[in-house]
Image (cartoon, rainbow, N blue to C red; front, side, top):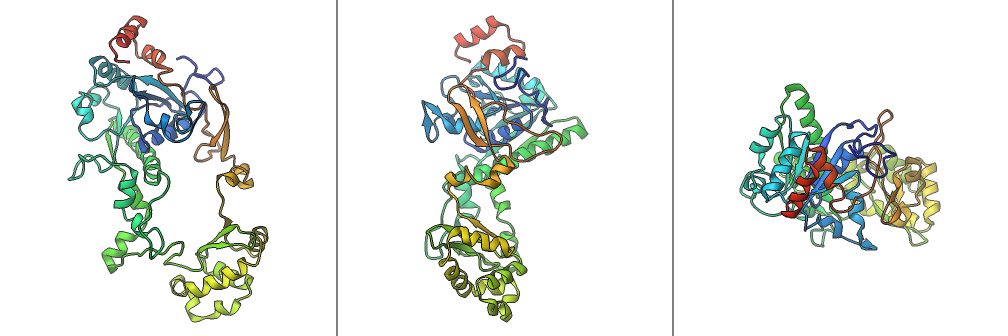
Length: 409
């Protein structure tokens, strides 16, 4: 296997991460499926990104770019080798089946039935490799009345109940300004793949992962269905407030900054009231539990907010730290990049990119003490590894040239 850039001479997928030796074919686009593949690659899997020869992955052109290089792709495409195949052609279909025969995982997010129309459904893939795990990420799942519909994370954020409870009480339902449902689904998909692989270790057989964008975000919302089922309770929009505790909000400081405060623990709520000089509130009968405090959020917000408004952000943070009360500054990305806690954790990593030079991006998702993950390289050029990957699958140079001449790669 040819070494890839940024690996210190080691072939792709042979870093010392816990997933070293795992081969993943990433056929997915925008954004949950590719994120799942990225997370697997971060911990050592050899991920091969499969793109159309003439229509590169949309994330390459999504959002801001520098010198013609899409920055989102540099993040989402990291730790992936890039291969071009037109899966609708005979040559592309045959190549994918040969690659799947030596792979552990295929991740795809086409609408249900698309791979089947191309002769690349589960029947064909599992025949090529009975141990294969096929992760299928769609908006609505592989069956049901909505399965045929196109969809993106925005629809999941709307359908799941998330938008209905987000925003101010007298305002419209609010959607997140980033791919929340896709991100949650991508993390869930990586977990699902690992669960399927663990099952394969016991049975010797692969299986299909059917993951719908509308489901992981519903799980993230917690007990809302249970509350409705048992109590008929429908949570309203409450802005930054919580229906379970108070004070919980964002508050403006004397120097025009903002801080966020949470008092989920009773002891923290009591310490906050003492800190702001209102200990008598903590002795009120209704203060004894979160629901009682939430019912008096106006009074508590006034007590806390008026105190914070008289102090600078630094003074507020220092006072809360001394009082062992929970607070955080509301930071934009500029402050995130210089935050000392993120720096201590190594949350942002610098990666040397051949087109753009040093890039700073989020590091791998978590730390492992024995077999840590790593960013081995940033998103590669379109089709950069086509010849190498096909050679590993047994294609001679003349065969690759014939595929290219036919438009299959």
